[in-house]
Amino acid sequence: MDIDSIGIVGAGTMGSGIAQACAVKGLPVVMVDINQQAIDRGLAAIGASLERLIKKQTLSGAEKSAALARITTGIELSALAGAPLVIEAATENEALKIGILKQLDALLPGAAIIATNTSSISITRLAAATRRPDRVIGVHFFNPVPMMALVELIRGLVTSDATHETAKAFTERLGKTPITVKNAPGFVVNRILVPMINEAFYVLAEGVASPADIDAGMKLGCNHPIGPLALGDMIGLDVCLAVLEVYYAEFEDSKYRACPLLKEMVAAGWLGRKTGRGVYSYQAGPALAP
Ligand SMILES: NC(=O)c1ccc[n+]([C@@H]2O[C@H](COP(=O)([O-])OP(=O)(O)OC[C@H]3O[C@@H](n4cnc5c(N)ncnc54)[C@H](O)[C@@H]3O)[C@@H](O)[C@H]2O)c1
Image (cartoon, rainbow, N blue to C red; front, top):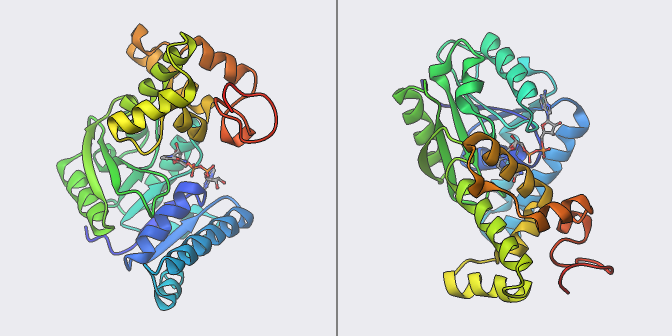
């Protein structure tokens, strides 16, 4: 099936980023959310992001206008009828996503592909909620979508080769680099990344080194652009803990047990940048490190 337009469910951080990436590459997009305020926030984020690209001189004013003109919106899933590929990027909640996928399944042409941007929910389970599990695939973009090159393509047990090939060609058309992953908790990147952050917390809790030295060690010794503790603060320590708890439960392996210090900090409400304090302080007040 020729992918000549894209439907997107969710106009939040990821949905709006995916809409922008598609529109800039010339693909017409229909972006749906639950109400007009959410749509307006998404469109404002896209406008601001395109404006930053103009300032960086990687986009012209005419290209910005053309990209925005390719994005239409709606507050009903029925606005997506006829789309050959719909990417679900709604809130990370399994029951919610299953409800959306069932509605899309009933609405879309038989040959259409349903992709989901979920970070943690089983693609095989989501696909099984539809009558087209062979045409369901995980297409996991990274944040911020317009800047990040990687897309993980997650094949559920039943995802067909044709669906995988179509999704691969689509992400390449966006200028992204796809990697192919079997359905497994955390896929590839987060499976490796989040336990590394957890290990940094153990190193910190044991007093092996200071936060600044742990982060400097990984930046200078491994060429990482950011240290694991600063990255944890950026992702949100509650998100890191929740992901570890999923791995611990799903793999039934103690190597994924969350560091008690990480749990303590989440219990205290020190969630990282979003609360102003985590391992580091982003405002006046206590934190583990200045
Ligand atoms: N934020 C990230 O860094 C990141 C990275 C990769 C993947 N993801 C995944 O992408 C998905 C979206 O995450 P986000 O960060 O954009 O969340 P977000 O909270 O910014 O946006 C979610 C949007 O979905 C909308 N929504 C909820 N129910 C809906 C429905 N029934 N129909 C239409 N829209 C609905 C909400 O109104 C909201 O605007 C999640 O599955 C998340 O796990 C997030």
